[in-house]
Image: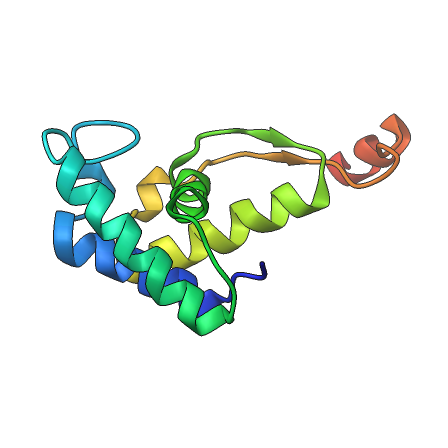
Length: 125
């Protein structure tokens, strides 16, 4: 399944509309004391995205996107994980689901071979 930025923005806009921004949820995975309502919205979004994509999407796949927007993971090596992290953070930020203060101030992403120490020293000069 290929998530589009439009799908991600729709996801985070819906969450903000129904539950407010992430910083007021009071819990990590779902809004505090709204488990049933949250599960219903995930199911509705899964149906909506299934129709748009032309194949079945589980509510757990919708939850996985939300997890990328809310994770505080600071180091990644897999290009697909880096992409999911960046694209979900961007869509969540656009929709007001997260704020700039919730973005990491520093992150390590490694593609292929690590840069040499000599390269790092040349940047500092």
